[in-house]
Length: 124
Image 1: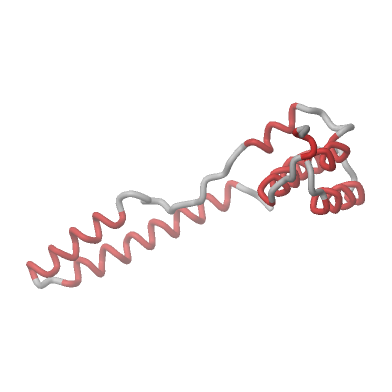
Image 2: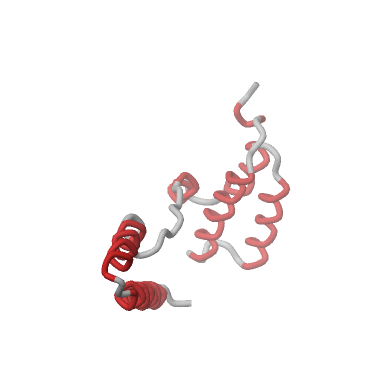
């Protein structure tokens, strides 16, 4: 069986839509063309059915379809749990819960500020 006849997954459709969105953002497609081609992507069942969508577009931008995105794990992905566990033990031993509460509040404030800064970098 030819590779073009293999069925595609939802992930492959999502990746194709992302590449098409880049072409649209770069001004290669009008809004109507983008919409029409998106419909073709979502209706496609095989790789062969995706090829006409990109036939007249530069190949270099298709590499974006292979990129994977990592989920955002927050500002302290590996440190938050050990820090909180250590503070919990310290709170139980010293009987001073205000330290734990204070640190939790501080972590949320830091995380919030980092999130706002990240959002300000991306207009729109």
